[in-house]
Image (cartoon, rainbow, N blue to C red; front, side):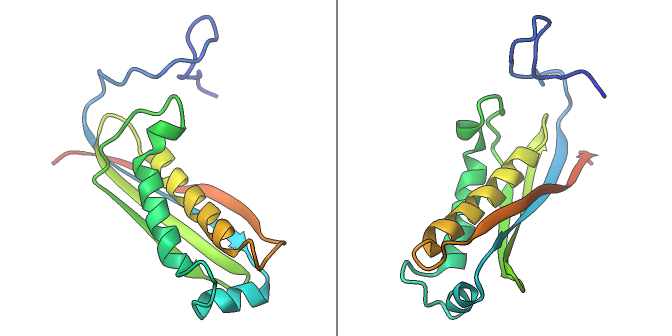
Length: 151
């Protein structure tokens, strides 16, 4: 296991200094799932949830959250992300959310992708909570992290 980069010699939390790292193209993808009751999934797919178009609102919430990651996670660097894509797809047991974050700079964008997925899932939960008391959010994970030299 490598040394922890977010702690100083005294074991105290710190922001990692990336100033000596070269700019690179950074891409990260993440995914998660919310399990819904079959009736809730049917209402969602028919766009009959009273709060509105759940999947579109969740998609927008995820994009906004990804852009605000450093406001939510104390040691994250504020990144001017180039793009965040969020996809909310109905599945057999609920909705699967995926996100891809892109940025060119000195540090990765995995936290932005994970934050986008998490907030999109929380938005689905919020919009469906009146009709489904058994929802479960889970399986949030990093799928892939890529860095490439600028051509």
